[in-house]
Amino acid sequence: LPELLSAAAKMGYATFAITTNAVALADGKMVKEFLRRPELRRDVGFCISLHSHLPGVSEKLTQAPGTFKKTLAGIKAIDRAGSFTYCLYHVITTLNFRAMPRYAAFIAKTFPRTDAVTFAYMFPAGHLGAKALDLYPKVSLTAPYLKEAADTLEAAGIRVELGSCGVVPLCLMRGTERLFLKTSKTSGDDYLTFDTAKMAPFPFFDGAFNHQNRVKGPGCAKCFINRACDGVWKFYAEKF
Image (cartoon, rainbow, N blue to C red; front, side):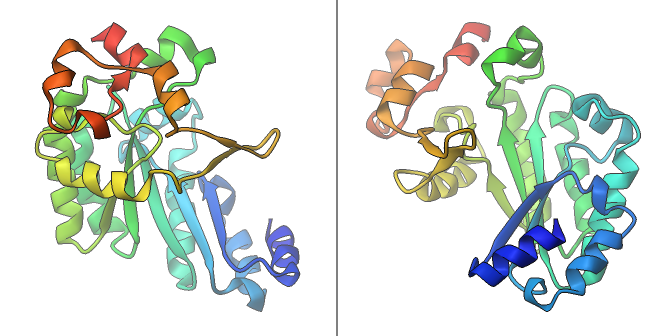
């Protein structure tokens, strides 16, 4: 990976975002290799998946026994290097949403230098089926815990984001509307996700995609933000 990024830097690429569970960084060797390459000491950022501060919950979600300690070690290796930015990514599920405030306190204490924590509602891939939907919580139940977590992190000077691809309607996010609005401002038409198999834009936010995958109830017509809201995922409406 350092060799690949080094080659890309020499070709003219200016910034690098590495999405990882940080397991391969746990022993610190790869991070030191990044540091040995002057062209990679700046403009390299890491986004690390950490879905719980509890080993049992984390490894149940990732289905990767023994990786929790390695992920923490990898984050610490990045943190110690001091040359790279990093943020954490936390998917909200039925197994972890009640612990989000404690997760936030853990992050603020253990990784106070992290730039941001992104909380994301799930966007289940179709092939996962009902098993994935079992992990999808009722959004209105999660909102108070998300608010408390966001308040804790922001008080510690850590930015809080909401994952764009799984965004839910404003009416379900009582108390966390500010997160929704901030995410909506940065999503819109300029937001691009790519299908890596063919490098074609994947339209999370265009009208055709939303019409196919989202639905609204009768009451939505009376809502003052109806025109700006795409409704809920169809699988969510069917479940709840």
